Length: 227
Image 1 (cartoon, rainbow, N blue to C red):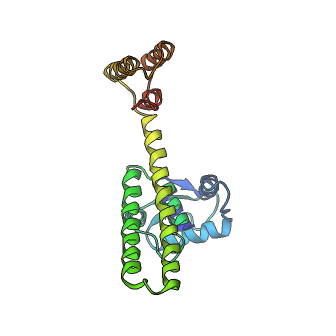
Image 2 (cartoon, rainbow, N blue to C red):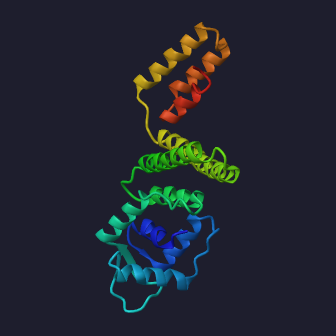
Image 3 (tube, rainbow, N blue to C red):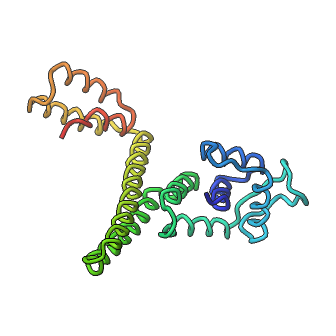
């Protein structure tokens, strides 16, 4: 867990006090990564020294000292979000950390972040596959090592795909629908009834739900099992 960048992500939402940052940090990580006060203020001190955050001018760190992100800090955070993880270390935690942080940064396209890292991992998988094909035919140890790496990368890509799906669903649940959207769905439902995919009772129930739908997510769930 990069405490440095997690704090920058929290500060990107607006100025916050030290203890507020600690509470939000632990809430965001489900208290899996507790953050003690000493580590918190030491990290904030280094960020302030590096010009990435600034405070209200209080001489000593304390519960009433407010911190805010600077332009340099915002730039550092944006670059970190888009930097592929170190392939030597486990990428699962790094990917989750970056996606969770991106959710907190105003104006950040989380879908873009996910797809950027997905592409980098796919390229890495292609490199390992090429090495396996060219150099591992007669080397069982190397083949097994490469297989382990490919399985590891594949699991991270699967997680990114699942995360992207959840993000899209969450976005759909925030988008309001229009009368035209409802009409398109009810027409689709009637077509499905004509094709024998829905019973009369199901058609009536789903048309009522479509007419009462408020978000794109509501409409998507009504037609989720239809081609």
